[in-house]
Amino acid sequence: MKSSKSVITGGAGFIGSNLTDHLVKNGHKVIVLDNFISGKKSNLSHQNKKDVKVVKMDISKSKNLNRHFKGADYVFHLAALAQIIPSIKNPKKYFENNVLGTLKVVEAAKKAKVKKLIYAASSSCYGAPKKFPTSEKDKIDLKNPYAVTKFIGEEIVMRYSSIFKMPNISFRFFNVYGPRLDTSGQYSAVIGTFLSQIKKNKPLTIVGDGKQTRDFIHVDDLANAFLKVINSKNVGKIYNLGSGKKISINSIAKIFNGKKRFIPIRPGEPRNSLANISKVKKDINWKPEISIETGIKQLLKN
Ligand SMILES: NC(=O)c1ccc[n+]([C@@H]2O[C@H](COP(=O)([O-])OP(=O)(O)OC[C@H]3O[C@@H](n4cnc5c(N)ncnc54)[C@H](O)[C@@H]3O)[C@@H](O)[C@H]2O)c1
Image (cartoon, rainbow, N blue to C red; front, side, top):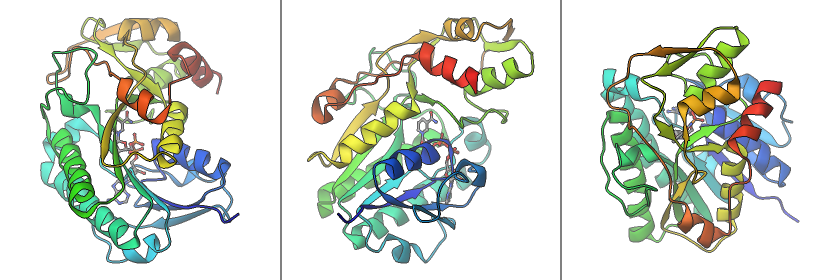
């Protein structure tokens, strides 16, 4: 049987490299397009050249996208600048990279007549939600340039789907964690920060009182949803992808079992975040399998 050809933009990043592993395990030939602005070559170094071709390019600037999309069955568009505070410092860079980049990718996917294009959207589109669990129909409230650019990207993907009948899907990720999560940066996600602190025997820095809650989804569960959606008939749909469970930052710190140090609250961050995942569960027959305790304990073993 002919194997599927999948293009992953941002495939050298945290989520993209994990998705690459899952696609290869499922018999796909993968082309990774990445400019390595935050992605790392080492995230893919275990892969075989026969299965994964890595092309260094900036998707928002390249004139060569069509060449790489030719013959592609699936496109997973994950490439983006993905941090909130830097987006406030440099919105133009975020617009050029994330919005123009998405337009270029969608155009190339349209030309290649792909079977499905999956877009990595973000739960940041809900801002500080008032309804919990938050569903896809709840209010959009864009609080920073990152959220704006990711949401415009989603609009582009969805409009191309309705106007040009493209088979597009948008997944709004909640807080994703798992192997290769960035642990180094000043703005890395809380689980990444805790991992690096625990390894250095430093106290875990808790923002505010630590009672704020988040919905964490393991990257393997996320990748399974990608695999399920490409084989489903659904197109032109937006789905929340979270665990559907909330946990406080204090409880996360408890799983890490380290000393705590409280630091001042950061403006603009939501107090609580929780995904309503009934739509995705029903439509693609998917559910998250990895509990936060199991996921974190696995990370601590490595
Ligand atoms: N991690 C999360 O919890 C989360 C939550 C919501 C949405 N997302 C979205 O998921 C996607 C992947 O996020 P991640 O956490 O793996 O981040 P990441 O920074 O590890 O991955 C992004 C990848 O895109 C690449 N990239 C950025 N701009 C590019 C460009 N112009 N051309 C080519 N490559 C480019 C980077 O080098 C990197 O490899 C992003 O679109 C992000 O907005 C992530």
